[in-house]
Length: 188
Image 1 (cartoon, rainbow, N blue to C red):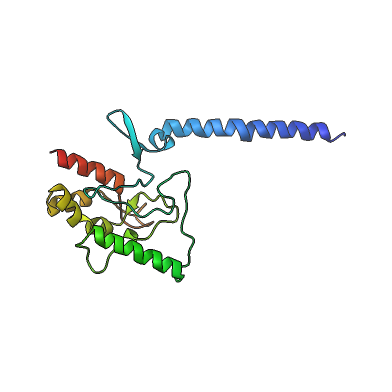
Image 2: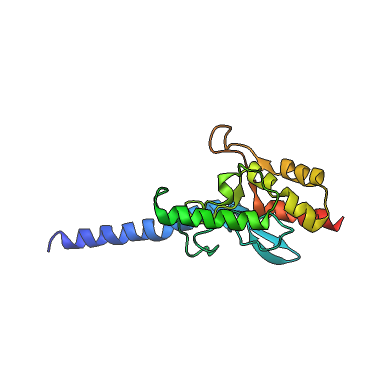
């Protein structure tokens, strides 16, 4: 019983420091230094939240760039990968089906298509595409919007983000930001 009171005091102090003080300080610092990121990198247009630059969103319009396939069905509360082995018959059948659908929607795809047009990301919510995957969609988008292939190529080039810190990751294009630029270009 002699050790109970000091242990209880220590537990209360640690709960206050770790469960209340630390989260409040880190939240305050994040809001002060990185307010957009701390609030989810939301994209606001005409006073309405239309999405986040951190999450892929389903796109059905043939006149817009389509993101990677999502095993989570683009639901941010259900992040999920396929968890299938690439040599499994189910995975091969799924990839063949996705490839057939992609070729049906994009009749002018090259023989070698970028893998990220048919494969999902680990989270199922990756907002980025490789520049090659974005470029492969140009003929479909050009036909649907009437914008020239050169204009669409320039839009993609303008939105390519390089490797993080110059060494991590691969060059990528944020699909949401690219589609916003495409929508703006169509209005001109």
